[in-house]
Length: 617
Figure 1 (spheres, rainbow, N blue to C red):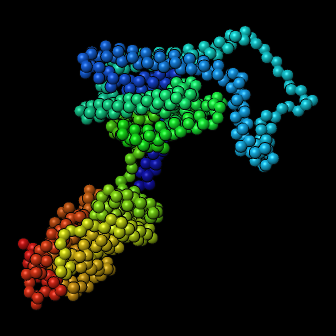
Figure 2 (cartoon, rainbow, N blue to C red; figure 1 turned 180 degrees about the horizontal axis):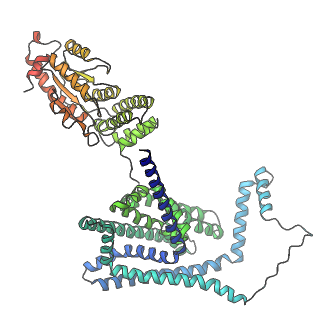
Figure 3 (cartoon, helix red, strand yellow; figure 1 turned 90 degrees about the vertical axis):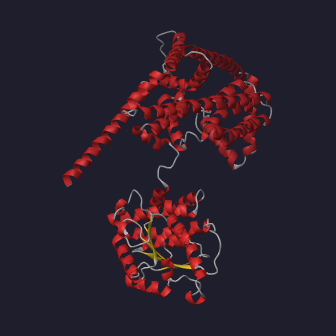
């Protein structure tokens, strides 16, 4: 046994080391070969964006080749025109910021702002600002000559400057040409690439994989195209708004806003910085900068709360934290291009995790849907002794479902898991006491927050029902849950303690004369004791209606599928909803029999035990 455990630990360590090695090699390859991977990522992004346009042209009657040519040509013309406009705007920006009057106006505005904050410099804040400024702009002490530096030039100065500009430009042109050609071939060979992807990930399930890949590619294309449209319209509105505010170079600021909106959450506010600074430097007062800020703030609010949720904001299910981490990761690897492509790349990885089983961990890491079912999350918070969050989970489910659904889908399964962990030794007795107490309190809170709906008419006197936990505190909590669900106007509920003996239960049934007896026994375990209780009650009261509540029994606890077949009970229910429905059906029979019985045959209009049993047919 020890040898097997040692071997398992060794295998896990080897797998962890292998995974770490693969990740290190992969990240290193993405970084050092970024000149190749960046054009590939750009081509994939452009292909996904342009595929819907190509498909639309094909449906209009064009062939694949002409549709691709027309789409790419329009995209090139649009990109070329935008690039020419932006280049002209950059030249104008360079001429504007070097003008002496603009620099003086900017200095004066900063001086005025400092005076508003620190006053005339006599107060402590002003003195602090002056001290910090003097430290930053400190000059060499008089009399101390700076160390001479000799610069030896092996080549003419103009040649070095030309190389510093030519090399990056050549690299960018090469990457752009590679991405352009690759995009065309991806659009033309779309089916071939799709079939190869199916062959790699299908594992023989061709039909399922084909549907998954088609659906995933359609979702990604639609998402990226809509994102491009939203960001472009955002930039156009920014350009028009800044133009009417008389902000110079408004097309440049609109283009920056469009590009920066691809950066999740902070992109818009980073794109706001250049026009704000330019407006502060060139405007006469502070009205124009405030207007620029209001324009960005208002437009971003509208997009986040109205436009994006309608179009694509909730369709992909990306986690906010995952997007921010992905933005930092890709910007570290590929710089500004990686920062812009981080959103589309994250979407592609998420969809890959959703539709390819071997990459399901990507959906768990990047998705925003809960990775734990409510019942598991509820139990996990209870084991951590975090009752507040456990209560929040139950109440969140209660907002979308009724009380009985919360009990059956969250609380009862959590109790069953706790009972199993206690039997396996994974949960201590003290932790079990906390789980039981906290569960009972949360159940009361849920029942009080959304009480069960009324179930119909009201009798002159309620029908008596006896609720009995089979064995332990967990069964007692299950019985308490059922008590919360029964209408007090219909039922006179009595809950007996879980430590009651079988003989005491028989005596209690004889003393209270209930119309029905419900024995709660949550799995796992407890079947033998439950059978014993039912047998003792049946021996004394053969006509009594008896229901066994094995609430929470599902695929996790398939132990009693055949064991309870011979139980001497009327019914065995697997959910609280079934038990409540069954009792409500019996209630009409009980009240009708009580109404037919004479005053001498019934006490308090409670149906006698024998009469209730006789009505079972």
